[in-house]
Image 1 (tube, helix red, strand yellow):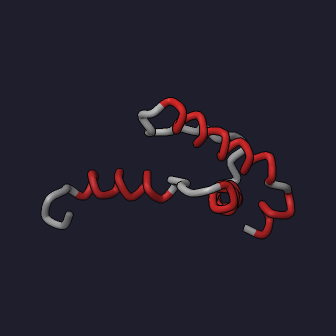
Image 2 (image 1 turned 30 degrees about the vertical axis):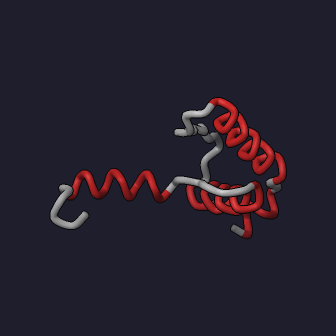
Length: 78
């Protein structure tokens, strides 16, 4: 992308990818724990860019399962 995008465009894309969490339940759980530990956020908003409704529902189910599995000890270690 060098030479094609401006510095603000590069920053925007990279900042979004920095907080993107993609994967199965275990991967999502690990990445969410790191994100929560790093940001100290007390609330998350989940967004799915999947078009298919069933796929989108499954992605939210994976996120919900991962969040339920997190505990305080994991958050401190991440």
